[in-house]
Length: 244
Image (cartoon, rainbow, N blue to C red; front, side):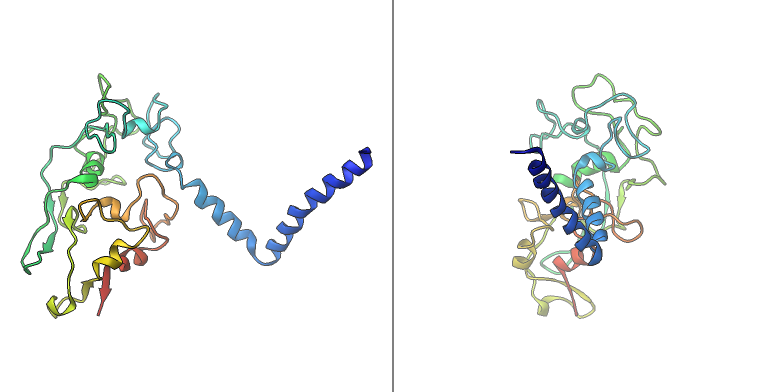
């Protein structure tokens, strides 16, 4: 192949994506490409505030620790076998929001369990962020050693003003819901068929029903919460709730 022909082929190949880019720009596709790149970047825990290593993007991060997964997971001698959980668990008792039982009784939700208990091991503020299995002492952190009142992500032990968690979502029928309730649960089959909003293996609503701890691609300050599993708040709410 002559040099001239090789150069013409290279130009033709490089011209295709250039022409495509120009077409997308003309159609307003540039913003779509930028948005897609931003979503992809935050679709990894590495780019989220849950990366507490020295490379983390948040103000709270380790002084020297470079391992990212270590703050939550360990390969051996896990505190909770699934999901190889390595962060020390809180021993707190929580004030919980009320739920309506299948018998129509209003009572406090159960104490957090499952994945919610794991989330609260950092977010209730009673355990050091660097208190992980296999370490003689907690990993040294910059700015703060634990979450405290007034700091982003702090939930405390009073959960009574938050959506209830760790309760079994049961099947309900509209004619069984008191008339003063504006919101009713959608059919359980509709809830469990959603690909993003997931109950746990026991059919319970947990923190991870609405939040994905490994991805923060939909976050918008003041609009969409951190680690949300859908692009808008209402899309998550309407997975489980119907309004009349």
